[in-house]
Amino acid sequence: ELRCSLKQSARGRSQRSSGNAPQGSTSVLLTKPRIEVVKNQDAGAAIAADLIQKALATSTSPVLGVATGATPQPVYRELAKRRQQNSVSFENVRASALDEYVGLPARSDASYRAFLEQQFALPVGMPLGALDVPDGAAPDLSAECSRYESAILNAGGVDVRHTGHGDHRLSLRPYAHR
Image (cartoon, rainbow, N blue to C red; front, side):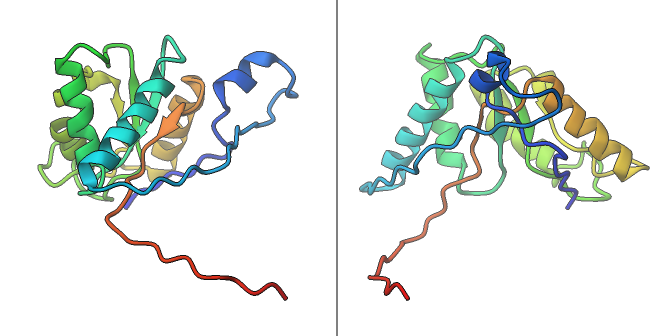
């Protein structure tokens, strides 16, 4: 996999526009995690779609981080349903993928790009040109990572990243402090 790691963290939009941070510094908005127990995967997908929809509404040019695999698919389906109901638009959204396979051409059916085009971008009505995925077949992978990182930073960072939620059960047990 080609996973480009940003040299600078994506800046939170409200922090970036405040002008309080020194030039070249990074700021990340952190919030306390919210834990929700839901009945099923569809209920979880609806909550995740609500959060994504709210985050996208805070910007005129939002950037969404997207992932591949089985776990984000219910969320993508929920967002596509909302797009069909005209409750959300992805016309001005840009999306950045987490990674791509090294050596796999972008047009391969097995690529992350192909997955994201078919499972996310097309169903939600996002222009394919607004989906940025690292080029795993680039002749110079370091240069490709630099291009990819610059594209994210030039877009102002990622507003919200959906990395999947998994289908796991979490058991919490008392913790003894030492």
